[in-house]
Length: 110
Image (cartoon, rainbow, N blue to C red; front, side, top):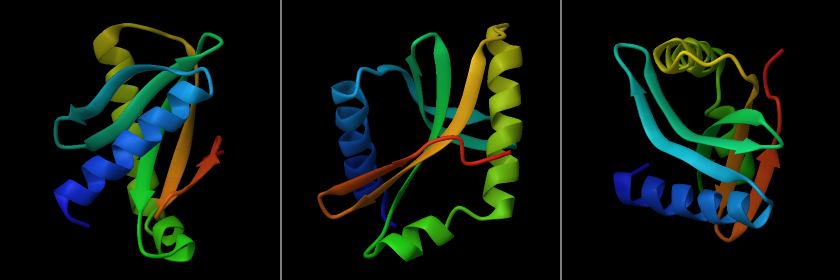
């Protein structure tokens, strides 16, 4: 996916989250050698670390969240929490953007 398409999907995701009562804390947090967290948001004192995926169809977008990606995301979350010296309740979520449809998948890891 091109950077422009990714930016558009992230903008749509931010608008969706804001409409659902989330506060966007940070976008595109880069963890050295680990990866990137697309969006970090809070709601009801819980941090949500969100992977945004966009594709021509839902299945392709969801399948791009593979075990390797989740592992990097978990390590990036740990790095973020250590760097910020915070210890909140948190979960890892995904937002799937296909055209104008947005699907919010909460707590995608166990």
